[in-house]
Length: 324
Image (cartoon, rainbow, N blue to C red):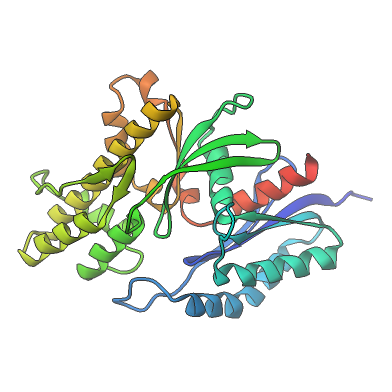
């Protein structure tokens, strides 16, 4: 009789995506289902109640698909992101549907349920896909860049998880909010990152400068948004405006990182979150942080596919917790 293959399930219900993933004992993905939440045209995201409702209405069907994929598989553990960040008071209702689903699967399979956070899931997915070398307990920096987060973190591997200390966060708008708000103002869909990047790639290189604002390592994007909206009103072509937006994003991140590296002495930086998938921002940072390949290796970028919200990292954390 053939032994059933052990698998580990991860679930993440963020403000943007309903995500389910399953990995085997080696960490290889054998099942994955990600569905973006639907945002009405012209809107800058969803209210928590609307996002929560979408998760509740779509999870039953997605779990049926998962069940069909589990033939000849044995669930060893279930992981779920039950809150945004690993810090006291971190809470968003949107993660409750995923938590309820994960508890039901774990109870039915009579296996352990491992609760983690959305941010730690991003870090785990990035660590695996960016091939970040983990050297004992040597810390590294993580820049979590998304529509809901602009956090520069001090991180150290801690057994099956991470020890995380927040160094700096955005003073007002998150970097993804900045990109999405100017994108929606330009008539693009939400989220706007991919369309902004596509437009910027078609610019002729002669785009207006938007001033960056960084205070003691913490970036601010409300001023850049005001400047970008003014340029839009002045009739600056969308391709040029998109290039200006991504350039000020890269400049702001560079200033923030240089301050953090000087303060901590750490030169290994892992980029996670949806904005980390932007290739123009990545190329600009790589160019600004050094001309040689050796120096560029201080920067580690999550695979673009796993930079956006996903449950891959959550599944990996469940596997690591169960096997530790």
